[in-house]
Amino acid sequence: MIDRQTVLDVIRQFVTAHFPTVPVDHLETLRAGDVIQQSLELVELVLHLEEKLGIEININELGENLIVQNFGELANELVRGERARHEK
Image 1 (spheres, one colour):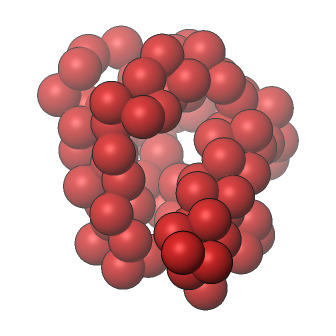
Image 2 (cartoon, rainbow, N blue to C red):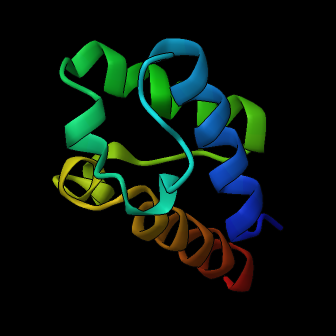
């Protein structure tokens, strides 16, 4: 089972590696859409999260939330989604 802090740590790794000029001190409040400008970068983030967290992310389910939510909200949504999958 994943937790919010682990998800944020994995996102922080990705942002630091791909966008070194973006300050990650307050990562939770950064909107993904403000950091990620190209759809390929978004796909790379999703693949990074899947690989590092060992989860499957349905981009269609998250939809626009991948871009409009801040990283903290995205982490919360991924944790909720994983919990729901495990409860089935």
